[in-house]
Length: 181
Image (cartoon, rainbow, N blue to C red; front, top):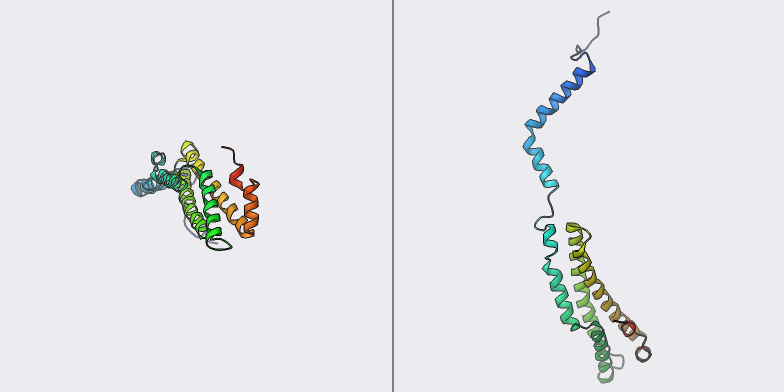
């Protein structure tokens, strides 16, 4: 019978085999060192064009808040009340059911601002994590959502009927009427 068929053993002990693997790995690393380091740098790089220090200076959040203040004239409750009275004026002047287009347009404006501020919130959360910057933007976001909710309340009451809307206003049952601030 012939002796073992195949290749003769290159390493006769486990230690020599491990040492050979280590040497091979070291040679491979030195050969591909620049490619490996470049890959690691790209992997751990912050968001392109947006680092943590930029999160505190996010001007889009400030711009959204300024637009929101302009739309609400720095008083969200007065804004909601103004929208109610504008709607009631159109009811008495023009149509028996009223014109809800103005409220819908205002809801669309507020909705766009909410969408923008949500994107900014996500961006800050990804770049800087939870912190003061995120808390400031969340505060703006909550205010916008509250006004949106008030306008939707007026719109829903109006859709139920002018009498129901008028009664809710007189009984101080509209959402914006029982907010204490």
